[in-house]
Amino acid sequence: MWTLMGKLVGIRELRRLTVVFGLSSAVQGVALALMIPFLRSFLGDRRDLALWLTAVVVLGVASLVLGSYATMASYRISVYDVCDALIRRIGDHVLALPLGWFDARSEAAVASGVSREVNTISHVASIVMPTLCDAFIIPGVMAAAVVFVDWRLALIMLLAVGPMAWAWALMRRRTRAADAVETQAAARTAGRLIEYARLQSVLRSTGAASTGWPPLEEALDDESRATLQTLRVKGRPAGYFTLSIQIAFALVMAAGLSAVMNASLDEAAYLAIMAVTARMVPPLSQSVLYAAEMHNSEIALRAIDAIVSAEPLPEPEPGRAATPVGTQIEFAGVTFGYDPAAPVVAGIDLKAEEGAVTALVGPSGAGKSTLLRLAARFWDVDRGGVTIGGADVRRIPTRTLMGMTSMVFQDVFLFDTTIRENVRMARPEATDAELEEAARNARLDTVVASLPGGWDTVVGQGGLKLSGGERQRVSIARAFLKDAPILLLDEITSALDGESEAAITEVMGELARGRTVVVVAHRLSTVRDADRVIFLQPGPDGGPARIAQCGDPRDLAATDGPFKDFVDASSSLWRLTGRPR
Image 1 (tube, rainbow, N blue to C red):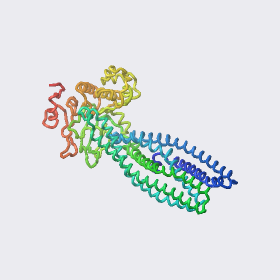
Image 2: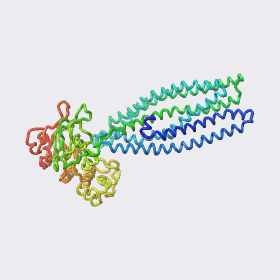
Image 3: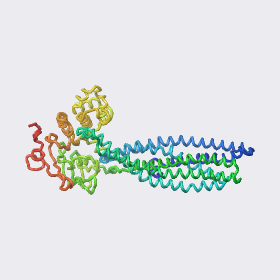
Image 4: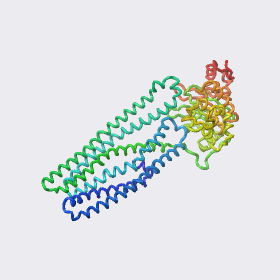
């Protein structure tokens, strides 16, 4: 655990804090141990009473000062060196990760990391460390003091260490696997919750939302079972640990009383030892709870380490970066799979000409969206290469590549702020006039005019206060405002009603003018005006997809093949020219 803390947080301050907490506990232990001679003097010969009282008070004050300093330092470390630093580190690293890294599971891991895991780790410095120092150092010092009074009672205390250490090790060993399962179950549930939120439109339209969603219910059941199993696994060793302490205390009490009865130990010493021993029992009993907290912190550290250890795509070395000349996109012998052993696409050779609209068409699972994302370098290809303007995307700095690319997807996410701020994110320095022009081009101005708050309307989390068509217009307005020379469109009208689809299709014609456009579509209405169509088809027996046809859409529509079949299947709604029958 300390290795991970040093890697993620910085170990120097934590080591210094551990030393101060340990010193504070040791001084407090000595002060409590001195209660034995103090009570013997108080109940017997009082000649040295003032000396022992002064020693106890001085050491008590010293322990208070050290403890107060360490407590304030622990709060600073928890807030700044743990919470603030870790959240910033996660945020900075996530910004450098490729867009292909993000899915429901990774998003849930980040959300859990900056909230649950960071909160768990923040307890180490301010709660766990001081509690464990008090639980073990103070009793250790007091047990050492008992040696000078009655070695037999000290021996009983020493013998209790064995069963306690065994129970402690047993609990850590058994809970390690159980906690890991519980954490994985919680992450799966978080991912399912995100999917459930995203799929609300589908679930509600099919009526599944009213009866529950089996994948989410299964994930919740798994998490519940994992939590109960973890509690059962932790409970038994914790019981053994506490029982060892209680048995040791009872034996010390009985042995001490026997020594008093045999006149080998004076009553004052016995009462003092019992008072000191009773002081040792509660913190020792509670320490087992914080042992579990330390294990939880270790799991939280591993979860955060998995995020910050995720490898970003390599950036070109200084002096080796390539500058695109133009915006033509070319795939040359591209093979790619999310699992390299199971490629999604293989041997892809295609060109998206500069200033033209290239449509990627084909059945679901044919790799259309994958190719679109490879053009934006969500991932690096396994074989072959993708170039823009003659430059390999792997040699184009990410900032440059993103600056020359606008992406509009089917699922539009809006931030829980105003329409104005959501559009302006495409180019924060844009003027109000440029903002309004982008809105007019995207037909967003009519939406803004119909809302009571106008531009200052807050769209809600994810933009849920707007319809799908309205959210799509906000996304298109962003593309107009950014004014990038490359436009990547992925199924932007597939989930819209007919009126919204017609409006968006018209807008897209204007947005595509003068840009290099690659569009993924299932609807003929989206590709009827494309300059070139690439028809992708999955390989036999689920093999990687390949290009089945490519060319002018009108030529392909008149030629027997998969694109003609696609046109014929769509002809009940549209002609190739876009006029309804």
